[in-house]
Image (cartoon, rainbow, N blue to C red; front, side, top):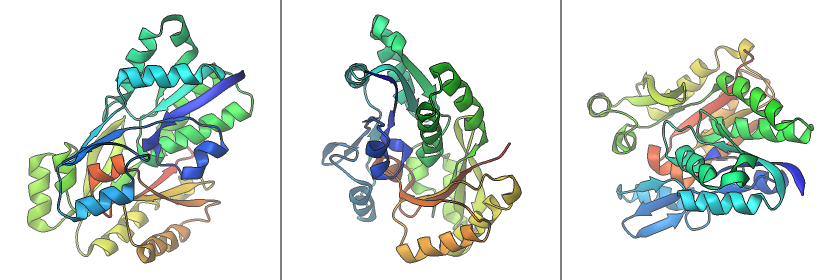
Length: 286
């Protein structure tokens, strides 16, 4: 039996090969459409959801893993690990963390071997926390030391996105009706930022969307002297390859970054923010 296992949820949006390579078991969210309920990644992909949304079908609901599913998932992992550190999506946007917490409480003595960490983020902002936990585990750190370091570093992560419009964000409760109507009336592109575990409206961009995205990237990275250069994510929901390359060039102008990692958002994230949403996510030095 291995000493410490790190587990997480599919909404951390890390590259597909990361989880197997670094031995990180994953629990999955669900998506309900007019045609049924599907398990993210296994039964529906971000590509499927983008195609579905582009057809004008907007009746989509995302669901966190249920308590019983967490109990089954954790029980399986406890057969392999003495203790588990589970990295979850911020509890301000999903029931996932609370369901995991209830699952742990129902598992009695076995539950004491499971340590839940609210990442305070979503998508690859959450992914940063997963990567750090794995690095610390592999360095031989104790559970308490890992959790203490994660609590510090997650406050330094910058998670933000820009969306073409506010329609899907409004439908999924991420922005209010007034913000949606303003964006619709003036053709504004909303920017969302994570702060204290919550999603808040961070401003708007006007004009042609792709040019607005490049301006968003420049503004996000203008504090380049205080940004850690080891890794940066460009995470998107179905943006064209040519445009992603333009974003990569803009990011490189504020580097050099050791790793510029492009990831596609999970189906769960994609159907909450809509097609061609894009974010640059990174970690501050302090």
